[in-house]
Length: 429
Ligand SMILES: *Cc1c(COP(=O)(O)O)cnc(C)c1O
Image (tube, rainbow, N blue to C red):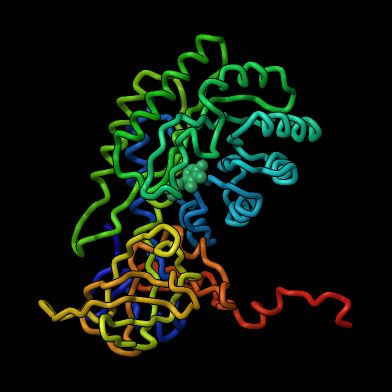
């Protein structure tokens, strides 16, 4: 479920008319619904806590899905931990007031500097992805006189996901240490001064809607936990990653949330039954995906003999998912279409000088005209967080709505800021 709906003929985010946000903040603009974020987080946390052995489960929101400070604060207030993948993300989580002891650091390529920062900050857990990283982490932490708690991210050789580019769990993918290596590395780690191995982690991909793929990977992890314990290793934590998918084709009144979350949690309960470990989860998309939209205005209609182009003021630099992953986003006009209104097939495109800057081709939409507002739905995850300034287009504004109030949580980048980031080489005098 999400909190974007028509009221009095106009699409609202909770109690706020999107027409008003467009008029006051301008377009393009991302709009996030606090109630939706909170609802998804609470649903997920309650479900996995109930499923986990002895109720021991921690949820670490994967902030790369949406790292807006307002979003992080909202989740932090609910007790969420944060899953990070760079020093910048660790810093931003701390800036949002998330205590270090609720921060996990994942990722295949952590640098020495990044590990030092994280260890010094006192984060909860580093998810180690290679033997090389194990050595580096131990060196860095022991130099600081610390012993960092960590887990091995294992590559279960079970990949899944909505697109090849977001599949991570196959042995052909770059992520994690191989299954066969874990025992040896665990034994090695016991002799290293700077790390304390606490368990295992796995993350097989993103936008996964089939419980079976998770189940196959998790079952392998549970077996591995047993083997390691039998060999006398300490295994107290099992981090099951993120990746749970969301519906992008949402019928307007469809309540999708609990079904998949509950099925997932039930499976987790079944697979981990009787296991004496604390479970970790790293959902990103699931928490914020349906909690955000990208609001954009129609700039031009460009009819051609065989098609009708609708040129909008948002582009692939603002929302890259269609260009990068062939992703589908519902498009809802802000002005509520009359029941049974005639539709036209539009190619919805942005202003960028690439044919790839196409949000959708041949989409049936109610007739639209210049200056009309439309919303790309389900844009809360991997939307703003993947945006760029390609074509020297300033980063768009982000807005959070809570009930009848809204706030700009990232102002639109100014042209001064955009141009001011460059420096001229000294030889120009
Ligand atoms: C991206 C990522 C996540 C979150 O994935 P979602 O599909 O957004 O839930 C979780 N863990 C790790 C290690 C990731 O890289």
